[in-house]
Length: 125
Image 1 (tube, rainbow, N blue to C red):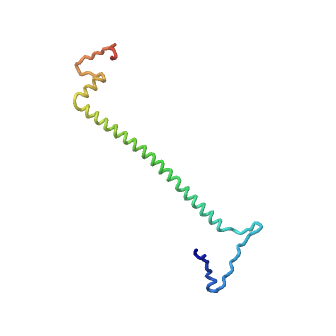
Image 2: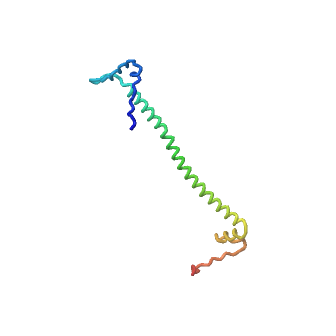
Image 3: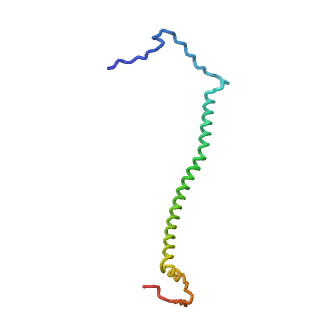
């Protein structure tokens, strides 16, 4: 078992007498002394709360901008897909008989042709 370690008092070793510590004052009867330590703490607290409030508005703006950026990215991706589809359709209409087929589907006829409308056909099997 290790011997118990004793705390050595530096004043006891040197032999110089220790100055007595002043006793804390107890105020009785609602003393009128100003407690500067409490006022300092309250001032620091007010400053920290004020700084926190100064950060709240930019942070909310940051979060809303971040959410909107995600929405815009999704919108841009959807528009890119639509653009790709429209370019493919334009290519198909520029070449071959697709343009004529689309015009006939819309009911258009060439100059000199006679259009016929057939009504009352069965709708299918």
